[in-house]
Image 1 (cartoon, rainbow, N blue to C red):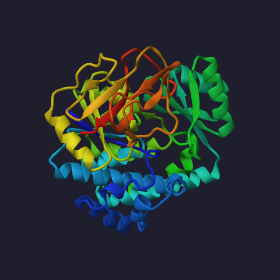
Image 2 (cartoon, rainbow, N blue to C red):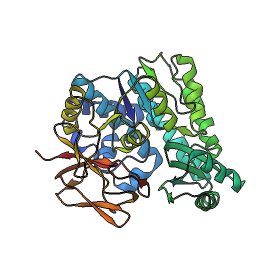
Image 3 (cartoon, rainbow, N blue to C red):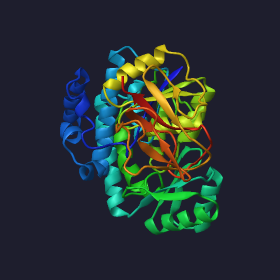
Length: 392
């Protein structure tokens, strides 16, 4: 069974809409711009990284691009029985499932971004990713600080995000290291998202949600707040209100979907962050991302092809006709090459990172679909580290 997943804030990048500008699905941009009373085409084509980093811009542009990709995927005949989105992506999932109308969701996302921006401007906040420590230990690190810091995202095994005031987040990071965390990385955000410090945004957004019509979802949609599927549309308004101040239970969401029989996870929108999380969380699942038109062919080939083979050779393994994995040469801590990002064109022999002191070089030439190991994560020999679409 197939589930579509939708990214949240942080996956946006300058020019991310350019590959789609001449596609039929681009018509959604004009409709979204009218609903939001914003120039969304500018955000998708011309905004620089600093402008896109603003919460109100990041959320609106990411949502609209995910909907463009969803529309394009539908035009080639691909569909899913389930939907789930990370934070902002939950609005994409509900729109894809028919619970929310596209026009209404654009307005909601615009209000959500503005409300969270205002809350962040009124209360300094920070977020940091804790790597290599289990969920309970990260929670203990926050509790030991006894200050305004909480777990905000349960993303994948060994990857948890904490959020709160800058000083409390810094001290929680130090405590996490004392408890055994391999690395703590500050995230480039200006707010304490998914914590009680977002309560002003929740109160503002509540009014907009109460004015919005909700319908029963078509297929399964799993919520961030409790990692459970909700078929009753009357439950979703409260779930969306609670989401702003509650942790995103993404790892648990993936397990819920896996337990329900979903084996193919397709990320729709910019980047491939959720693809990597699914790969690490659900071993043996089939994962891919669609962020540009060329990926549509890969999607159709994947859905028509056999399951992914087990990885066991150091030089890489076939995924499908045009895809390859680069795997770890040994056990150790993985460090990615600085600046390497999804979409980069790799040549044979390009260093993608190190496992301990050993270089990891790509045995293939092609486009990097995404890294499957988190920077600073301990990996085993032959574990997948990167996923390429090879040159033909």
